[in-house]
Image (cartoon, rainbow, N blue to C red; front, side, top):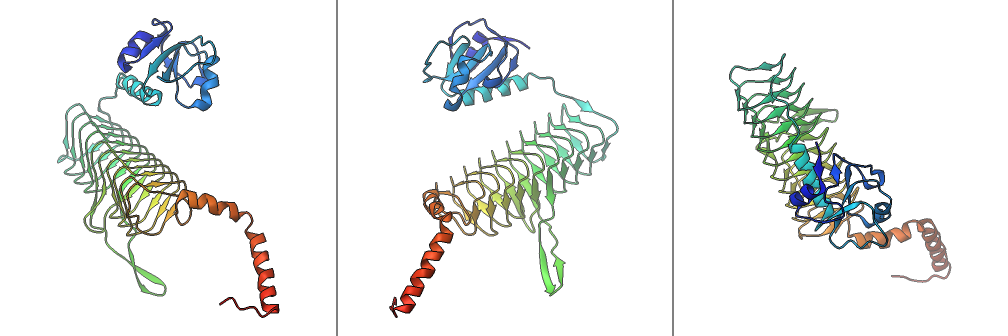
Length: 347
């Protein structure tokens, strides 16, 4: 599939500098650019590549200033990173999608399948399932009883969706993800045994949610575990029972969110964060990588880093002393001996 620079500029409402008929048939990173490909430049750290890249077209921000001659064709846009995302999504929408119901599959007679489905081979769809229009379910998936899946949702291979789960429209669920497994609920009965607490709730995933590979979202003990509209969870995240993740929150890989935690809207969590149970986190909270949050965050728009999570400026100031901690302890021990020897009171 080929495009020329002029067509791409029209899609992005960009301004061309160079050959408007430059042909593009592929995408490439700017540092690995090759003829007939399009790249983008959004991070100033990569500026030097634009003078040597072989890409035929490069998307750049409107305020980019060249320091020397550039041979490739430029398309100036307000935000090059956003523009490449738009272009990639446009390209992807043009790709031929699979369709039909492959064999062998097992679909219960009470299941309702919408228009233009794709259901891959070795997929099992249980009783009373409702699947919307244009849904794609790739091979080797399990869809439990009473599950509902909205229009245009894509479920990649090897996904397991337990009974009673509700999934909205325009969602993407990547391979190996498990939705609706039992929450981690056990009551101690003596020093050596635990009684399992039945998990009778479900999982509700609203519209336009994307779950990465190997994400686990546990069903609620009672009520619902909720992933709200626009949420993005990266690979290997765990969402425990009765958690509520607010709209448009994004969480990078390997996060752990304990049971009954409530996360606000528009939060951004970096990788390997950990959140204690029964915690409430305010809207627009930012957590740095490996931040551990033991208690509530009540004020909106704060940033935390460290274990336990504190203000990043406080963390950086404290980190200066971490490497000198042993020396500081030795100095304190010397001071204690001086105080003891001279019978000095510090009360």
